[in-house]
Length: 169
Image (tube, rainbow, N blue to C red):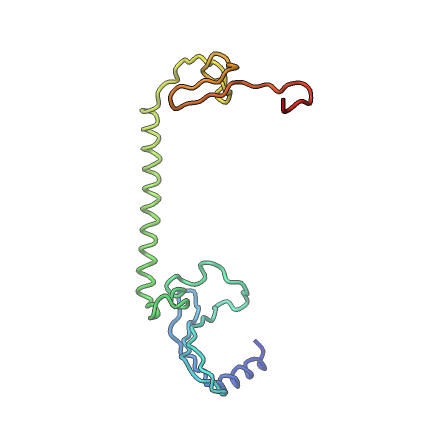
């Protein structure tokens, strides 16, 4: 930021009655500010703002993980009070615990799955294949010309188109 931009921002803040209140800093060096609701020089009410000043100002794009989840919740107004450093560290330890427990659970599951597959798998039986399951007459003798019906099932008879152009006779 050049000195002219800094001067312009300072002048704008003095005219707009915008007062930044520093609320906290995270472990990455990002600074968080709160600007309460105020009226600007034209009499318009400007709602409260919660902003973050990135530690690495050369980065333009936001990357996941550069802001702790607790601070992100405060910025997005899903929580009313800013988080404390103790709360952030407690939640970080909890996430590490869960990560370790899930890795252990995954490893145990793989071992149990391997053992149970060895015990439960039956040897393949000798079967005699007769036809293909996608064939319309799988498991039957041959398709019949006449339709068949038994109870709730209906099997239409086989049909072959006639030669010639006679359709309605």
